Length: 156
Image (cartoon, rainbow, N blue to C red; front, side, top):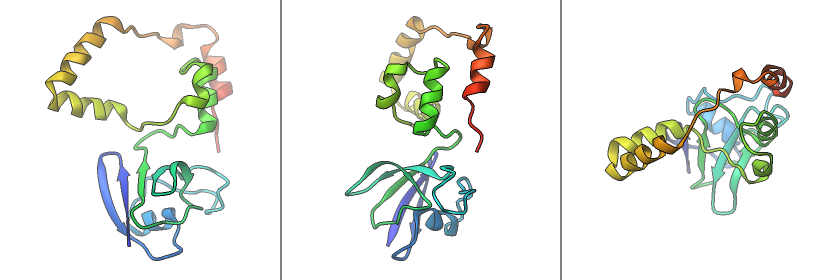
């Protein structure tokens, strides 16, 4: 039996035996980019992954989720953007408050966009169009940003 694990753009086909958790399967497969500092009790939420299977699609804690045949697991390559952090992102103005419950993590979208732009003229044209209408906002120039940012950071 196998699960497919996506670590950024790297794909792993990992064998498992019945009863093993997704985290155990990943660790046995040599994936070191995700850990559970709580010892696999589901308390620290550092092992959060995005799972797609026949009966479930969404965020789950890999340390308490049993591996199933055909399951697909996505690990974000750099940052964790779990539900708790979405509220902080809204507090900081990174996403609108109204979007907290409707947002989802997408992983490394910069990498996906770069690959798309490299492979598709249509994508390059769309990026060119967007570049003309999008503007950047430097939050660090706002007087209350640093204070609010520090208050919203979570350390586990």
